[in-house]
Length: 178
Image (cartoon, rainbow, N blue to C red; front, side, top):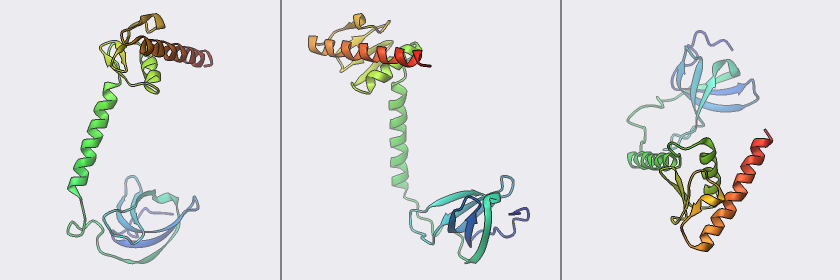
């Protein structure tokens, strides 16, 4: 498909498209970026609050047919943007990013981070400087061996030692297998 002229990709056109990968769909052109040769399409005729947007490299278009012209799909008067939903998504993403950042140890070895990650799969853990705190009561200090487990009830202490021993063996086996 030669899209060098770009004239056939006018905003608002509704096309039926067959790609060289075998996909067939109908979509309305939102925009065409000539330098990257990418076509942005809104699939289907649904113009509700949720839209399926497809980015397609124009040279993957095997054939297309013009089905008609519609109104500008990005007309601000007809766009429905739920600012409360966007703000809620942003806040959730920030909370998740902060939680993810707290899971990264500062000033610890790769092995310590691997042990932390492995323990976090089965037990609630967080960092306290370079010590791993498990179940808010048991501490695992460097060099992160079962002997460096302290605090907590005897049962919690033993549980952490067992899990730590198992995880260290598993991590060592994984390193040996590489």
